Length: 121
View 1 (cartoon, rainbow, N blue to C red):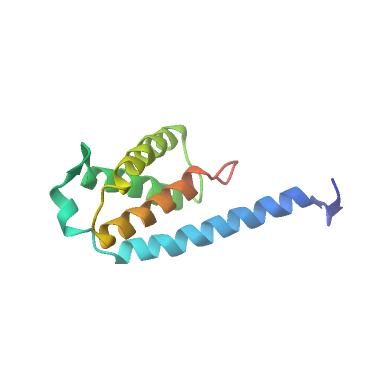
View 2: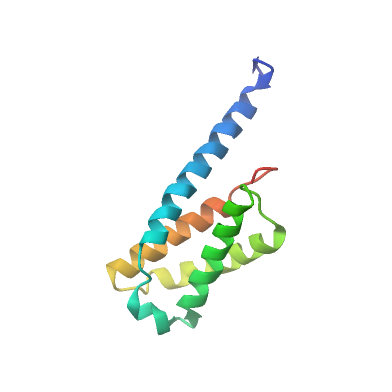
């Protein structure tokens, strides 16, 4: 593989991908924090999934990933994978556009974090 300045092209691409991921997570996280949790979902179970707990689990994993400088542990990765499955199960059942927007953004955040790999991911 060709090298520039002592770094492989792949390493440069990985760094760009990592910094882009971190930038995007930061932007989406700020949007998420500003968005109110949809009122109806406060006490709702959708397809047997508690929406409050789903939100808490996914947002908690994203928050810890950000606080840890973009690293994740196996336990949180398992939580992300399980809860993203739950989110996928309920997304099409949300009739309110605000609820769907809130949950899709949270899902995008969680997928970005779950997809982060390597020492910085």
